[in-house]
Length: 365
Image (cartoon, rainbow, N blue to C red; front, side, top):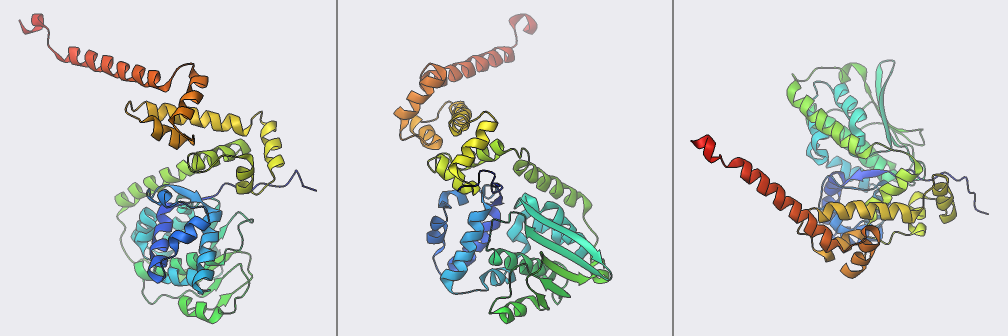
């Protein structure tokens, strides 16, 4: 019997900018990235915008599948060993500008959610050791060995690239069980490894982590921090169940059929549980989908030159005729009339501005 109180999977994301370097490295090994992305429901068109987001559970599964397909159990760690600060954009720059290793990891902890939300990261002191931890908060995303090994090895490479090329952590922890090829992973990390831990961690010498390597350009760092904070704000916000469903609709509209079954699968719950939880908020999938379509249609039509076929595709309709019928139900008139009104308003506004810009005869006299 279905448990109607089952917890839903959090709507977790990772930015395309964080995926791109991995996809490029995968393609160099074997041109299977397109096939694997498609297998895990990540469309190639989604990768055009570096600031766009894709579901985190799909990315993690993609990485696990890539390791299995290539027959490289340490693929995540190998990708991490090739990591460069530029691979994570502004956050990589912030790390490279940090005066100390500790400051660098502190920035990762504070701003990791600009690249990947639903992630727990932090710094703690344990005697003469400084410990940085990283873990995906969503327990339903499993297995995730490749993501963990990539993240930890890449973070070690960040230190070597930005501070000391011969730097080694005192110890490294992983939450997954010890793999058969643990020795290969140890060669990438250059430190003792402990498996089956409560989190993924990099343990380092406290004094070394506090050593000052450079004077910081504080103005540049502040500018980058503002930018990264803005990115975090874009993926933050509402956390109600309806908001999570709405976010999924926004993510997939025009690319997939928005059905109760599909959305329930994305959230890791049954279709009936999804419907009941929305009913508690007085909503349905149809309500949320219609609202988003109306908002998106208004935005696209406001440009004045949008093709009905393009708008229909973006909103997930079969063709322009289907969109026009839906629009008439919403507004009582055709979208072409709506567009014409917007164009007319723009022309009138332009005419007023033009008239005001012409000096009167009296003022010239």
